[in-house]
Length: 502
Image (cartoon, rainbow, N blue to C red):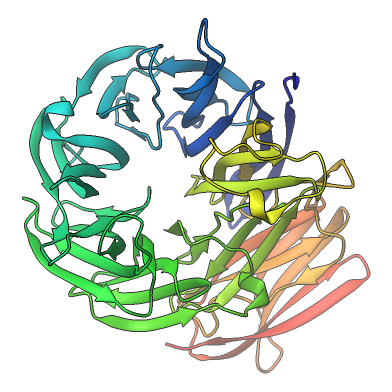
C-alpha cells in the first residue's frame, strides 16, 4: 500500500513596479491515497484562495474494485489544504472536470455519472442544489462559463444523438433550469460526430465558439479540426473545418475581431489566428521547434501583458510553460524537471491575479524509469505504476518560477546570474516592460537615457533581494526615437537599446 505523499513548498517574492507593490507566490502540492487521484482544473477564487476539481478513487464496500468519485479541494493562497469534499452519489462512478465561481462566492461544479449533473455549492462546499440532465440525453459536461452578468450558464458536453456521442452546447439560467441544448454533428452518409476537449470553447454575451475535431464515426482516425460559431440561441452561424489541423482544443480572444486557437497540427503543437468569420489570419506549426517541445495542445490563455501562455504536457518527466506573442512567436519557454521514474500530466492551466499561473493534473510513479508506452488516459488498463497516481497542483509566479525536483531534491527557479532582458514589446508605444534578474541581494539602479546620453528617467534606485523583477516604462511624454536603459547592480552593469515608435 502506497502511503500518503505530500510535498508543499512556497516562496513569496515582493517586487515594486512603479509605485505599486505586488506579491507573487509559488508553491506545489502533491497528494493522494492508495488508488488513482486526478485534478482536472484549479481556479483562483475571489477571496485569493484556490479550488480544484477532479476525482479520487475509493474502494467499493464488499468489492475488489474501486470507483472514481467527484472530488473538490480548497487551498489557501500558499497551497495549504483548507478542506476537501466528495460530490454526488457515494455508490456510483462520477468525476468533475471543471468548475466556476459566481460573484457571491458560490461554486458551480459539473459532475458526470451515467449522465450529466450540475451542482451549486456555497463557499464552504455545502450543497445548494443538484440538477440532473438525464432527460435531455446529456451524458457529460466538461466545461462551463457564465454570460450575461452571471445570469446564464453555458456548458459544453456530450449528447447521445442518433446513437452516437457528439459535442453539444447547453444553456441554463443561474438556477440550473434548462433553456436549450444543441448537439453538433454533420448529416452525412455516415454520421459525422464532433468531439471537444475540456477547454474547447469561448463564450461571451453575444457569441459562442465551440472547437475540437470532427470524424466520420467514433474511433475512426480521419480527424479534422473544426471551429463553429453560434448565436445566443445555439443556431450555427458558421462551421469551419481546417485541413491542416487534427483538432483545435482551446480558443482565446486576441482583439475585438481576432482570436487565437491552439491545437494539434500534423504531428505537434499548432496555433492559428482567425477572424470573427473563421478566416485564418496566420498559422504557426511548432513541429521541430525545441522551445515548443512537449508543450500540450489543450489550453491557451491570454495574460495581463497581452501575451499568450500554453502548457498541459502529457506523460513527460517535467512540467512546461511557454509564452507567445500575438503572432505566435515564442517569447519564453520554461521546463520544470522531475525524476525520470515519474510522469507529469498537466490537465489545465489558468491565470492568477498576481500575473502568475495555476496548473492542475497528476503525477504518475513508476517502479523503473519512465516508459512512454504506458501513458494512456484509459486507467482501466493494467500497466506498471497503474495505481500510483497522485494529484498535482502547482502555482507559478509571474516570473515563471515554481517548485520542481532534481536528483530527488526540491528545487526552485531563483536566478543564478545577473540578467538584463530585452524590453517587451520593442518597438513600443507608449509603454514597455523591462525585466531583470539578481542572483543575490544587491543595490540596484535602473535608468533610461536618450540617444545623446542624457538621463531621461530613473526607474529604480534601491536595495533589492535576490529574484526576478519587471518594471514598466511609460514614454507617453517622449518623442519617437532610440532610447537606452542601463542596469547597475553591485559590479554588474548592462545596457540595452529600445525604440519608441509613435
